[in-house]
Image 1 (cartoon, rainbow, N blue to C red):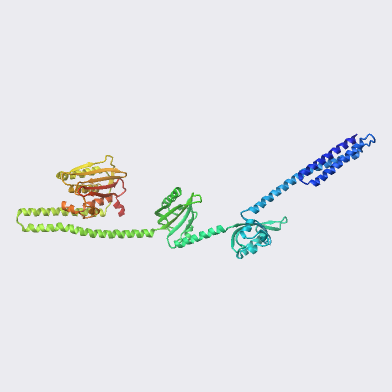
Image 2 (image 1 turned 60 degrees about the horizontal axis):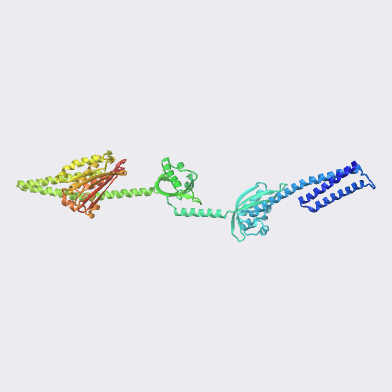
Length: 593
């Protein structure tokens, strides 16, 4: 009975083993092998089944041998376990195979589709494989390359260095290295490449083959050559000129500097800031200008002290923003031309022109003064001559009055001439805040008798909010007195002279309008010239010196202001004076300094 049970278990186990074999057939894909194994196990199970049936036959019962069946059971169990153990092994083998296939696919894709040349070269330099990019770069097919060595297509002048690196690598001195070389294209052109090579060794440590990655650097070489040519053209174009061309990044560090005059000294700027190179009083404003270009993206041009490489000098500075491909400001480029010598020449030329102008003015002054002095002197001499020879008291009194009048004219003329001389060479004048209305009122009070005598009405149109100005009281008093005196002299009786004031920004505007005969258009450009008098003025006021308006203009200019006139014949004239509210010093003093 026990033997039969063992036999049944053995049969079941063998059928289970056959079923597992069939599953492995589907899993591994090796259908024939596993089908034979499953068939063998099934036949063994059927044989055991026949034995079981024979043992249970009623006609001729033949009980199974327990010892034999136990051995068969053990064998069945071993076969079941063996088939079960093979399954995970095959699973792992399948996974490993798939991983190897995936890795091979990735490698092949990287090799075939890489945007770089990749090849394998044996220790003799013969190509073992080459990817499409390398074939396209060199102009050969893969089959053609595998029949060549790198020595055959290397540009001869570069070959020796290439072989030296190969020998060092095979000797174990290098495992990986990068260098530049030139290949000869199939059509004969030279190809500049950057080559990175790595040595692959066998398991024994012996050199096996070399993996090389090649990058076509012709665009970079062409860009470098273009920049070299541009630098050369720039050098030739500005050879001998005192120019420093430069570029700075967004942090205002110099990235490039070029100057044919100063050579390598300009290169010392690279990597440095203006504050590293210049005194603070120069570097500060210069950096502020450059930062303004960075912030605004707008170019500028300015004359100012800047880097002169051999000290601080006057420079004509041009700065422009530098932009990337997307239009963003990434730095600045500029040029600084040393204009110290030019400025010196300009100052010398200006000084010479001023000296010539002074000489010309002096000549004109002497000529005009001689004429204006000669006339009253002649009148004086004639009057004195006649006084000595005429006994008629009435006529003597007349000529005495002429002498007195001409003496007064000479005194006024000399006083005005001295005033102009002092204004031409101003001494230090202390200015102070002055109420313009107070000065004007003082002048009006002094000239009131003259207006009353001619029955002329003086109207004052004064602004309520007029600010005080920084000025010289005596100069401002003389200016207003000259303008009002002229207005009263040339205005007919029973008419009006108007004086107005107003504030406009940082200026005070004074206007004196008369109702006199006006000024001819041809005389207007000369009205402020020294000793100039219109024909109408000579007729109406023969005693005038012709210096009053010239003195007025000089006073206004010394205060940093301006004076102008508008006139209509037979309707009158309007003199307009513009004076700044504040000033640190008189303009004439600044010029003299």
